[in-house]
Image (cartoon, rainbow, N blue to C red; front, side, top):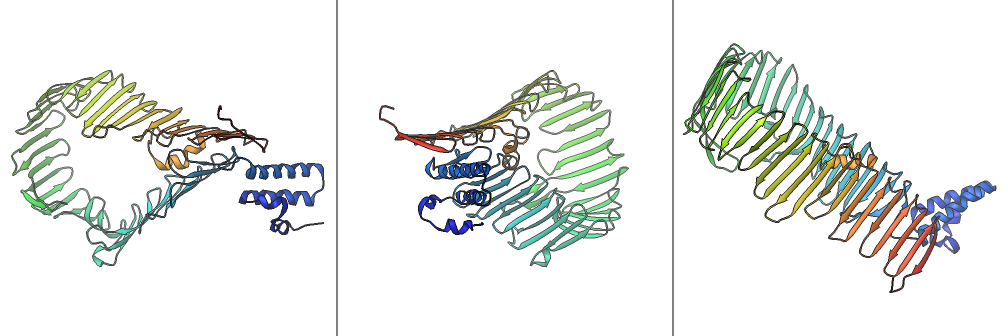
Length: 520
């Protein structure tokens, strides 16, 4: 005899009135189907187990649901919201503030959304495939070689759509025909604001290539061997690597803030590149530089503020006199053996054994590189220090805001752990950190990969008075807030919640509770 379980569940009276959670309804359906279809002792035991499981969801600890590796739902510690994890590190869903959500299937993909902006981020096997949308703008890419993007130009505000299959296919479409371009390498193409140039035009590359940067136009014939340059105060040509020359006069341009600024001129000449150069830089300014290179015998750079001469470059002797920054430096050969002394810089370096270098802003030391390395930058309001042992094996980073007095502190020991404390004094410890020391503060790594191997997590929020700990993907989990303390172990078989008024227990899904006395 078969009974339709859905009809039974529709009857809200009696013992089924406690079904308020979708997971309760689903699993009770399974239990009833098994009980009604197979009348044997084994099936009855399974059905009763599911019933106890669902009964405990309603009558046990209601604020969170803890079943360890199988299913765990809990409040976030470092931010408002809650997180649900299914099958340990593999599936996760997180709601963080109004309109913000994150779904992940580690280590394959993650989906983040924020309806307030709106913003969407979708990643598959990061960094192989990603899709990012911010308002009306978006970008989709596959291994950074194929990409489709849509956005607005800063100056005109026109919407543009770009499609790229690097380095063979480039296309942009826009309502303004002046913004459109199309290119298929090596046959024909015209690009705008790509490849570090304002415009690029080619036919049967490398036979003919024309580039434009500012007002300077460079025509290349069988690039990069022969080119002619003109415009923007520039005249020059080269037959690389045999000979080349270029002359530029002093010009002016308007910067991004609307101010007019001068662009220095120069004279450049080379023969048998890179063995002989003779350049005059900074023409039209108060600091003209004269550069001469005869490799490998001699190089020099002389100006009113600096003099640099090298004999037997790069393995010979280098002598630097910095008049503006007030220091003198000797390298033999530079930068492996280097000594500097003066107000602007002090250095003592014998690579790889020992180094100690300091300027008014930067300090850099090492001992038996890469055994120990220390760096410090002091530039108001930033005071940043970092000490490393064996490159990424151990790292201790501190960033202090000298204006507010707050401090960020991060310690990594690869691959054992990563710990950080932010400017709000929020703390997070993760045991097993395989990628994080190499790519710190990478949100995609933390979303997709960290949950897979992070078998111990501990978080602390002093401002909210909250803390949490998780072992082996919630096989054991504990949380604490000013209102309650909760812990769960062995897939939820043991759970305890303590508040100011009550103690609640759940052992093998059977709930118990008792009131606490004021003495407790």
